[in-house]
Length: 405
Figure (cartoon, rainbow, N blue to C red):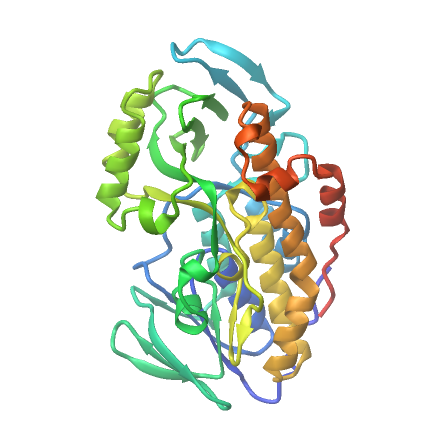
């Protein structure tokens, strides 16, 4: 279905979007099409490389279709044919061509794609009318009834009608407007790391899992990427310590943390860890929820992980980001310049969908811990969800429908 694209705003409302991963470029695309004056600021010096394999599902597939990029997304899918599980000695313990750990059922309509590939597609779709400011970020902002005055890290000061924080789970926009991260981040007991490595295993559109039960480590997952030219390596570390106490800020120290944690791992881990040290796209972060009573304050609103991260455990982060960006842009267009009405409608439209996505993550973690025999140690939040109606939650997600704007 093609959206009606003529702008309805009486003037070109200026919008600054912080973050150029998935949510930001999707929002920029739709706002630009609706006649808004759009600027995107990104801390990195270009589109960031690396990242997880992510899933485009349900409403996100529809958003991609309405943007005219669905074929491009399908063309860059990971194309995995299945997965194996191996033991410490590398011997294969199981094999399936029905699903993968990273992408779910092989025959589903969902599309698994690398985060950086999807970000590039969304960026390219936006066109030249969108202003991108790379290697910069919001350092401070101040708002009143008329505008938001933004001071950038580069020293530049500019005014915008609206500011949207799409800058991830550790959002600077959220911190500046809504307060410390600790007030909103709910750590879910684990950390996930990812980096690119060579395909020295000779995998052909395949994924290999190396579980390490009972070790306090989730083990490793290695999947091919870029037509088997490389792999993405994923590792997990279990820890109840929140990021403020567990996670170093320095990337080298983060790599050292992973290397130390997996020092006794077998299989191919020594070589994968050796390649980690030279990986320019290494990333390590908390499995966490962001929970907030409101996603907006005045002329500033939050989008995607910045406002309501459901964690990688949900498998819904990309879908939430793209669907929410479409809804936010549509409500801003429908409100014809009344941002208060638009932000209220945006939250009303998405609150239940977001809550269900976050529940999916809690149920998944609780059931994994229960399967590992750790259910006796579940904290209260996970204990409440270990017997939840998982099928019912999936039905609620499937019932979500995008409006036409």
